[in-house]
Image (cartoon, rainbow, N blue to C red; front, side):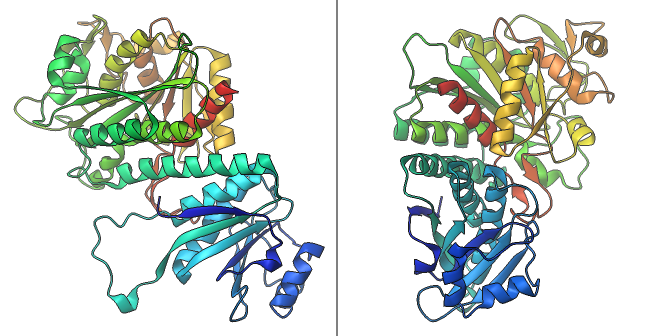
Amino acid sequence: MSLTLHLAHHAPAASDTPLLVVVLPQAPALTEALASLDASVGGALSRSIARRDFRGGRDEALLLIGGEGGIQRVLLVGHGSAALTRTTARRAAAVAARQAMKLGVGAMHLYAADASDDVVEGLAIGAAAGSWEFTDLRTPAPEADRRAPLTDATILAADRESARTAFSAAVALGEGQAIAKRLGMLPGNYCTPETFVEVGREIAARHGMTVTVLGRADMEREKMGAFLAVAQATPEEPRLVVLEYKGGAADAAPVVLMGKGICFDTGGISIKPAPEMEWMKFDMSGAGGVMGAMETIGRMQLPINVVGIIGSTTNMLSGTAYKPGDVVRASNGKTIEVVNTDAEGRMVLADLLVFAKRFNPAVVIDAATLTGAIVMGLGHNAVGVFGAERNVVDEVLAAGERAGEPGWPLPLWDDYKEQIKSDVADVRQTGGRAAGSITAALFLKEFVDGYPWVHLDVAGTAYSQTDLGWIPKGPTGTPVGTFVEFVRARAR
């Protein structure tokens, strides 16, 4: 993460900064704390509120110019009529950071009146999200056209230990989300299965984790016929990467976080349409989310055992590609009738779910950009959440709510299983268009054995094809926050 975050405890008017951000509600009033700030900008703040030049609507921003020193600029950012929470503070801070990037100020301070610990955390997370950009593959602009990137952000908060703890958690989450976003933005010729090996080893080295890597020959010995079917069309070595974080008791069952890591998805023989196929570089977002979550968990040093598992390959076309009508055998012995080679993610996850059992997990949560059907059902606003045990599903939903990555539960009724019955194998890989995300989850359930499990379909939320205002188009950081909040709650 290129942004360095700081925590300070002085009054907003005492700031020495090129940009002071003030987060305000709808129909704001000039409080006592803001009166001295107003004086430092010649009454511009009070006039702007009185004239209703600034009304505090969600994402509304108004820039006021200050003096040569001290506070040089004031940016008012609204969080609307909703209460100031971790989520609304995150959004407002992200809007502010994006404005700061456009201004080229290099640094900013953020202030929200009476900020709770959750708000402090949200402000720091939002600043990191709004300032993040992917420049790895761009030629730098001419010197005269460059604006200074935002490299420093200071959160103003009361001097208390709990605020410092919340701030540290936000820094850790920002670093994890930055890893997930960078992996997502890398094109398929840069982000390969080997990239996940490299990133996994870097995370393990930083935080004292154990890393295990399996390749094609290892998967053959494990009889991972479903995973290998997807990988058989590419010369690139498929990779299964395991990160083990041991922060809890040696005998405590771990939380297992699992991610689909298809570095590029052509659809295989069932090839996707050419328009917008380039967005399929994001088909590894579940795996990126696991990597980001493991980085955050390692930084937080949570007292819990966590295992991160990702399966990575590319879904390509070649003379050796798996075909509709093929029957393959997964590592639990079940045979699968392939119906659509573009339903490759569930094939990879099937063998990962079997593999996870050896860790005697307390719970397994997988995340995958699995189905277009979830986008039809929930749009780009909610994660599809599936699980057989309602109490665990509720835990995941609560985690997503805290993280600002809301989910919505969908059923796993046995009635839908009729759609994945096969005439030639134990199970069909897809159940057709109707209830496509539900039948995909039911397919995964066939490979879950003896442990609580929740599946997150993040196809509509892991990345955005449009600018959302508070973050640009591209990766959103989902599901890093949900993973981390779930683990944090279990660690308490």
